[in-house]
Image (tube, rainbow over all chains, first blue to last red; front, side, top):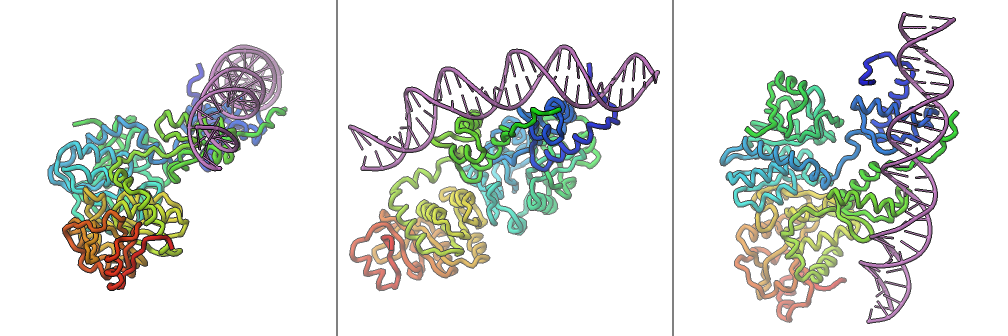
Length: 264
Length: 264
DNA sequence: ATAATTATGTTGCGAAATGTGATTTTTATT
DNA sequence: AATAAAAATCACATTTCGCAACATAATTAT
């Protein structure tokens, strides 16, 4: 059986592999037909290349070609459906970290929306401030929650306020705990984001509040999004829904960050 | 040699799915005809794509295309149905008072939501700031609108920010025209409100902005709500959908306020 | 040099995706 | 309400793809 052939010095193939990965990185996808024409090799060869790269986890195979893992900047409606149980579990864990009367910040995102649901269900009396329109709209109908929304320009993608205004607005609160979203987690334990402004916002938020947790469902592990969140290691921890592969646990332990993945 | 590499590459299916979702997330809808033309595939193929995505719960099928699956609870949307034509008419009139590039403030309420619809449809490039979550959520998907939401505590009833925070936040804008809601109109021409805080907010708003109009549909005439809005006579005018009984017209004329009730 | 190994090409067939056209349903218009 | 236009639906034809087995060429090891 030909399982992971660990030889390092293949001579011909790597030339194609590099180009394939480059294309997928820049375009988000590549088709077998295009690649075969470009390299002037048979489609079977390309198929083998792609299979090899897919086994290494560098891309995802699809009918007719391959795509990057995070191909699409998924719309809000899609993201909220994906891994719903996982997000509910995260919400439960997060709610367990919150006490009566606290002031909580909730970032935009579907995972933080799940946290909002859990906090509303907890019956704790809380003051929650958020940058997300959807979260505010939900929370303002909950009898146990006082809801504040941070002012600023509203981003189309996130349906939330973004930019300097938000950072300025958050200064007026004495926030006990913040729950932040993110785009992915790099193998060395840094949380990453889709946009520069988002990463900046979150990194500033960490330094402004007492305690900050990231809430990231398990589909985010190993997913790479372009921007690193500068001081994500200063966060108190990361809340997720599944125990990650071994290494990551150690990485977090080294940084003094907690990694929460099951109800206490 | 390779002779069979001469096929044209179709767009990969997941790539279409991503683009479709992206469009629906940002525009709220997408038509089959447009999508088929864009990807250069048959309508049937797009139909299958949409069905696939609909089965996954990521969008909602309609005749001729698909729309964003609206997860938002009805809330205000029910109230907005009542006297819908009247409110639409008010929206049209209001939009006629707005010019390219202006900065507009929209109060909370269903009538102002109708104004928001009219402004979005006008294709004018505008900056709109609002205290209403529903209005912000709607406007942030409109390509011709830059949306700002004023920060503050969110009121359960209005689904909008209220209180001193809002007044403070509005100071940062140079607003060209504001459209305010209200609870009723007294026989002597004063606009009235349901709550103290609401009346205070609106009266302050009038003195802060260049030009303020009230938008009040005809059902509000003669209706008395508890609080008088102190300086409502300093507003530029009242926009409504029907010509009121004779006296009121004179009252407004005496005060130098315009009473707009039909499209110019 | 020869054998073993690896990379690539070729072919056939079942499966999946897409296209096409006839028919029914929905929507819009008068 | 009657009609026309647009879109959905369905069945079937066509294209494309994936997979596997095998053949051939290139590379490496002995």
